[in-house]
Length: 235
Image (cartoon, rainbow, N blue to C red; front, side, top):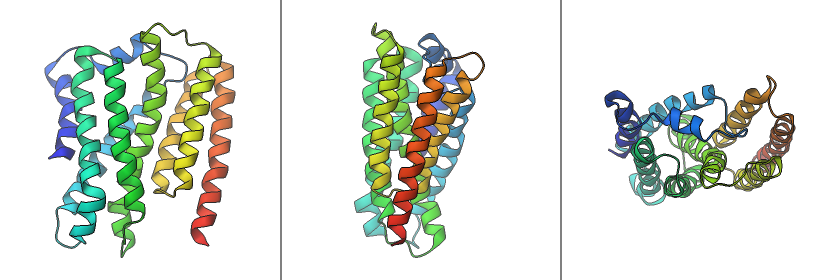
């Protein structure tokens, strides 16, 4: 139900014209570290993969006790917060409360992603159906919490200077690096790289060169952290 609500919360306002489109809300408070529009297509993958996870978790061929205790409830929390955010934002915009909703979803998603990486998966398909989708959700919500936070700050009257934006990217890089060191699914790192690549793409055509360098540096640093984490995992 939570996986379906996650989809409905983001889709129904667009279908029925409730409030103002989220894209328009975002453009009204755009900053140089908000990813290019194409990056948000990742939500389609998140919705489908989350629904597949939910269907698998409801099946009988998995260790139900371990899955429910360690993973399912925080996943429900993450999906639900995504749905709430999708319903809230068209009506009220990018506000402090919308950021709190994302942060609550991020907390739940990180809990689920880190727990799923330690789930006693018996096959590669179980890792694909459990750890991978939850890692993707957690990674994208990590990016959304920081870059979306820049829009919220702009709405609160904070001037988005290069120093402020680079500081936000730096904080996001450190945060993501610490999570990667805790060995979530590689899809977590992929979502971060996806967001940073979209930030670079947005600024390539006469955009903010400082942000391009900062985002490229963040990608380089996180690649090193990811390689180190993979090496630790293989030992």
